[in-house]
Length: 198
Image (cartoon, rainbow, N blue to C red; front, side, top):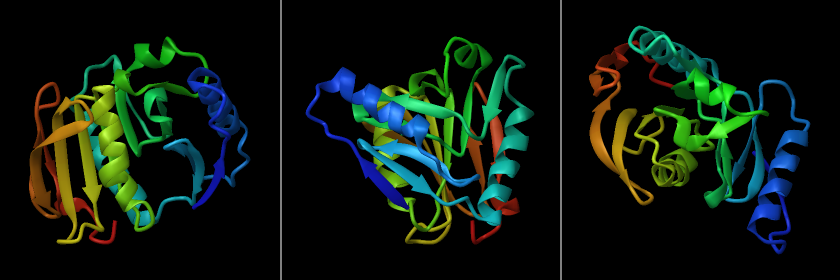
């Protein structure tokens, strides 16, 4: 992962615009993910086959339960200006109206109903800590973390009930078990189909 930094001395509004401009203008190889993480523009390599396989498995199941006017997006930027963050979650579930209401390449993270991150070995800490805190602070109702690199073994954790920048753990299962996503999803997600090296 590489990073670009921005001079943060210009005041928050101007600083955010500068960060977004650099994010938009970053010329990364196709398939790479460009994000703003705690005020730093980062570039991550394309995800592994196993990572993409997990994203597809989750996306297919979500499409079976979401309302017709919602979408599941794999490259949707989600902005959190108060956290100097602009993330591209592995999956963003949001009403189509949220995308249509915004010009550009991102939506406010608060518009999402569910965000899904699938850890890679190089970014697991960011997904577990930084992004979880930012998504909670934005009031995203549900955050699903698929962590193939968890210290105790591959784990799927569902976070909810955000307060400040903290989520409550609603459920956690090891790969192979089923995790239940509550309303409005009402989904029993079978993780036995996930590759173990995701």
